[in-house]
Length: 226
Image (tube, rainbow, N blue to C red; front, side):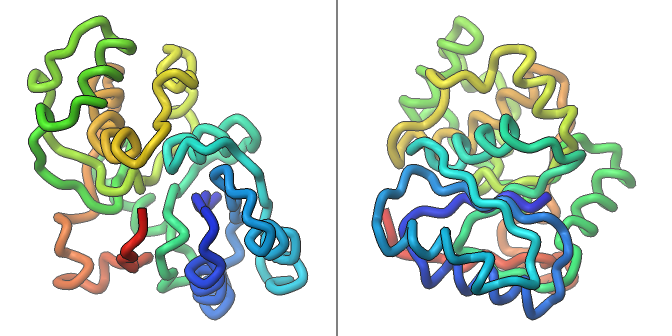
């Protein structure tokens, strides 16, 4: 299943779904509305089956908890064996976007394959300290290997989320409530993975989407939005 976090922007979501239609994507797609009540956007979501009858789309209306909240909402309300979590501001380049992620996970024995990983300074994010303290009882985020998950965009099997859920690590008080805490989750996912013994890595470094097109089952479109 492909899970898409979407909020307000009809144009970017329509571009993504059009790219999926043009590539004959047959995989189930779950669009999670992250708390938008904008009438035009809600109306668009209600019309998706008429606009894209070729696609197998499920629309869920979730809380305003950004990407991480959308992933958790989809996990709780679907029962797929595997997930690819992406933003609405992406373009699909093939008929099975999960394949490259799935193959890397199998070859390298990974539980999670991120779209892109990045090296970052953990200590700069106060929200990360707070979430780590709530989850694990300490604020020492620098003890972890600092390989972030760009955009909280990644592929995993369901058992990964089962493990996090069973350890009470996907509870509401940990989920983002603004843009800053959402950005902190790019670093908090890796902490959750490391604490629970989940192996993760990226398809490539951040710039591989420009250097190695064959690693691009999906492409990120950068938007200037809050």
